[in-house]
Length: 144
Image (cartoon, rainbow, N blue to C red; front, side):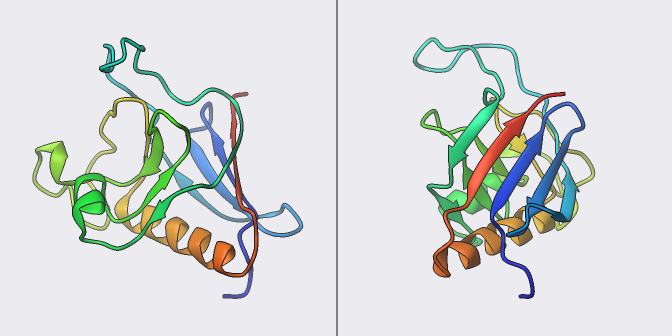
């Protein structure tokens, strides 16, 4: 890899996720879905996207097709303690093509940000590579 990921920036307004290098310049960007279902989780908290802020990268899964990625697509990047994440489509979506590289739609979630499987896999792989090389990657969630 030529560039090493230092920050994942999620822009809720633009519905884009950006990969930033050591100079905090964008070297890749992807479309995301930000739609979520109405309702409440088991703790009575309303479904919603992650609040704006900076979050440490704490869990990344690119071991497709294990149990986690089979349910959440080819790549999974956890953002907060509620389990809201950046991930692809998965078998739990209940539609044909959920595990295809590029899904026909970016379905609503329970508060996560949905990516195309191939994009989620790429980003998760770059996140793991950065961590393996000693970089403390952060996730920066913004609205404009």
